[in-house]
Image (cartoon, rainbow, N blue to C red; front, side, top):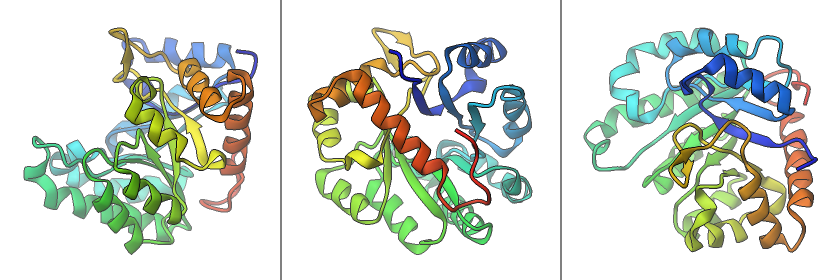
Amino acid sequence: MSTPTVDLHCHLDLYPDPIGAARRCAESGAYILSVTTTPKAWRGTAALAKGHDRIRTALGLHPQLAHERIGELPLFEALLPETRYVGEVGLDGSPECKPYWREQVSVFDHVLAASARAGGRILSIHSRRAATEVLDVLARHPDAGIPVLHWFSGTKAELQRAVAMGCWFSVGPAMVTGKRGRDLLAAMPRDRVLTETDGPFAAIGGKPLSPGEVAPACEALGACWDISADEAATAVLGNLRRLASSAVGGPASPT
C-alpha cells in the first residue's frame, strides 16, 4: 500500500520488543497512536516515540484495570498537560469486569472531567458490551473532547446515537472479518472513520497484528465505499489530518 497507513489504537509498549516495534513503525512511515493502560506506563511508553514524529502516545487507564489503578488518577491529571491524546479509557461490561462497574464509571467520569478542564482531548474509547453506558457518560461531559470509539461492537441503534453525538470510529482487521462488523462499518460516516490494529491483542489467523498492519481493514473499507483499498487508505489519512488539526488539547500535532 503506497499511502501511509493509520493505526489509531495500538499497544506499542506491550509487544515483545517495543523498541523494535517503534523502529519498524518509523521505517514504514505509518501514523501510530500508542495507547497506554495505566498512567504509570506513560513515561516509558512515551519514550518509545522519541525521534519518531509519526508516533503519538495516549494517556490511559483501561477499564479492566480501573479497580486496581484508581489510585493513579492524580498521576493521570498531572500527566494530562503533556498530551493531546487520552486512551485507552472507557467501560467494559463483560462478566469478569461487571463486579467492578462502580470503579469503572468513577474512573471514566474522572478522566472525562479532567479532559474537559484541560480544554478537551482526542479520546480513544473502549466500549465492549457497554456502548449505551459509555455514551451516557460522554453525554455528561460534552466538553471532554472528540470521542473515537475503538472496535465498536454495539447495536445499530447505539451506533446511530454515537454518530448523532459526534463520535468517530477506529476499525481494525479483526473487526471487519465478520458480517456484523462490516454491517456496522457500512453505517459509519465515511469522514469519521479511522483504522487501527489493537495490536498485539488483535490477531488474524492466530498471528498478532503488527503496528500499522491495517491493509485488511482498508480493503474492507474500499469494498464498503466502492473504491480501491489505496483510495480508502488515502481517505483515512485525510480523516486523521482533520482530527489532528482539531481545536482540542492545545496546538495541533504535526501529521
